[in-house]
Image 1: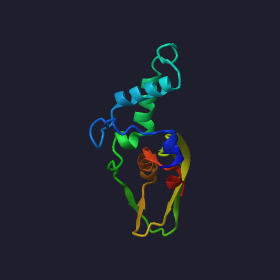
Image 2: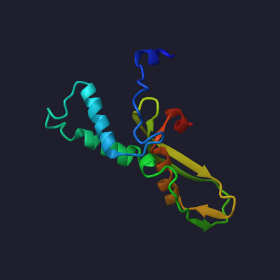
Image 3: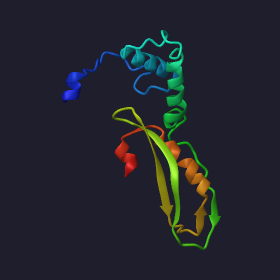
Length: 148
């Protein structure tokens, strides 16, 4: 048992909703944010600015930060290619990515660079790369796995 486990014991008697593999549920996410706020001593119903915060936060996480989970991590992407004679490196820089650290549940943001050498006489459409990369990043992952 680590020191973290001793400080924060886990109640293993709490059942996981939906069995072993829960399905995404935006209302459950909103309820979780309400519990977090209340755990911090904040009454979401006591402040008019906080009234809808649990659902707003749930929508942000459900629809944006964790879209790779809620929409499917391996969504099909159709790659458009074009004929080319070039054997020079093709590089796309500054692709915005975001994910959630699986250790701390904090979002992190950055940019990615993808480079490849077209070896089959086909050039991959750059717009497809820019659209396809963010999807696998939108789920929980350790920061170091995306930073390498």
